[in-house]
Length: 270
Ligand code: GLP
Image 1 (cartoon, helix red, strand yellow):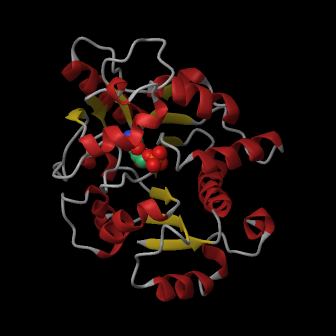
Image 2: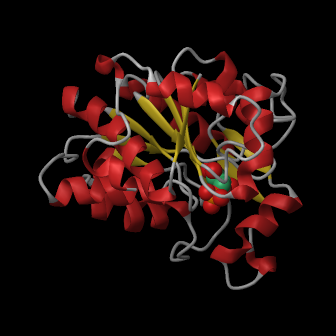
């Protein structure tokens, strides 16, 4: 696992967007795994800037959302289908037909999950999966004790997750109790995992994910098993890590050919 500690949240977005741009530059129809939540918004903002400045073209790029609430009304602004359209597809100039979100409104949830998995398979698989992390270590909506080999399925949200996400709803009661989420086994099949996080509220979960034991009690610890997992976090989010000196040393001494470095281009400006 590569752990990159950025100086600011903006730099988190810049470094992670650089990773994605590198992949799309080589493969314009690359498949992105799209996380929602507030953490990846800095990544999408930087990709939108790159698009605006004609540094990237995502018209042919495909995408699959990580998860979706079950049972929200079709027009509800907190539906991830709406969030993906509003905060990702439009500003990044993606083609709406190229982006698939699990169908949280289906009456047959199991079929909706099978259809979603089949669509990922037909696409050839996810090239880079963008991830946030919940305060309890969840990725997607795979709550603690999710099977490490799980596939896309309906999950029951923890009260912690419902409380954390209440800010996107008018009232806490409005937050659904169920969701459809890519499974941990589904996420693991992406060719690269790219987790971003900011703020001290994520520090404990990140320490468990990066330096704790591999355990379904911290679903994000699955990244430890993946051959290409990159974690980009700011100083506050890195606050509970033990090996920060090593992560900085490793990044500062990366071979020049291997990726983005601080101090170059907009990433150096925070
Ligand atoms: C939700 C999403 C996750 C996200 C998590 C953290 O539960 N399903 O994909 O990683 O929230 O969200 P935030 O980045 O807003 O803290």
